[in-house]
Amino acid sequence: MKQLLNLLRTNNLVPRAPLTVAKNEATGEHVFYLYDVIYDGDGWGINAMDVISALAQVGQGGTLRMRIKSPGGDVMESKAIVTAMREFMANGGKIIAQVDSLAASCASWIAMTANEIEIADGAFMMIHKATSGGWGTDNELRKVADVLTMVEKSIVDVYTATTKKTPEQIQQWMDAETWFTADEAVANGFAHRVTSRLVDAPTNLANISWNLSAYSNAPKALLEPTKPKEPELDVAAILENNQRRLRLLDINV
Image 1 (cartoon, rainbow, N blue to C red):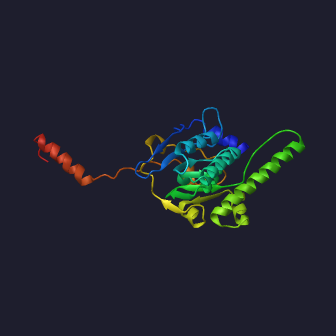
Image 2 (image 1 turned 90 degrees about the horizontal axis):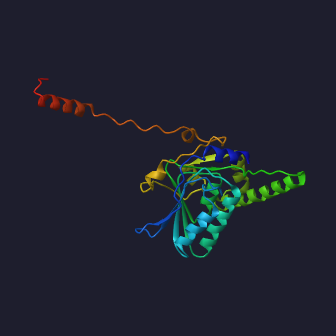
Image 3 (image 1 turned 60 degrees about the horizontal axis):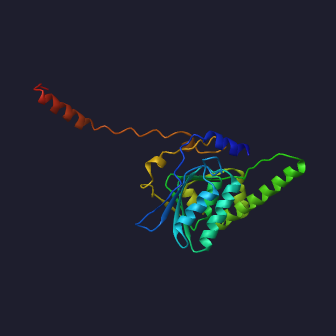
């Protein structure tokens, strides 16, 4: 629970993504942006009802491309999202999960539920142990722990079914909070292919970034903001341009 609270606290000022579903007329796919913390918050965070609404807009038998840029969030809210996705697919729908930059924690679990999983070159996926919290008597806290154990087992089952890895291997990765690059995700079965499909990301969403200090092993590339690349100067062109301007002023150079 402390980890979730830290995640929410450090990211509560990140601009929220619009919860809309747009149809790509060229491909026939509907596109939904899961660019947020997964949480049933007061006016922010993406929750199960948002995803259910998106799936309803797609309609039975349609295809939804779920683009993901999320640091994770609440495991029980994610469980409800996974249930809605499974029901949609069981009724003839298709979901393509496209990890644009980050699918961490339960966001990776959501991605694993899709029919197809793509991950952008340079993106990351992360899996770790489920966390929760509670208060009350010792018996009540044991019940919370029992529920968390069952939830974690269901998460392991999803990862195992998708990756074809053993439950023991998955559990080892979860215990260690393991981060996968795009190539590593594909190599270990967490994604089907690496994609460069990012050119159509709305500019108001492309610059969203997350504070990942709540996690123990977040890659340095995600913890430190990327500095914009300095443009290369064409020195010869600059000199020629300056000389031309001086000649216009009738100055001998």
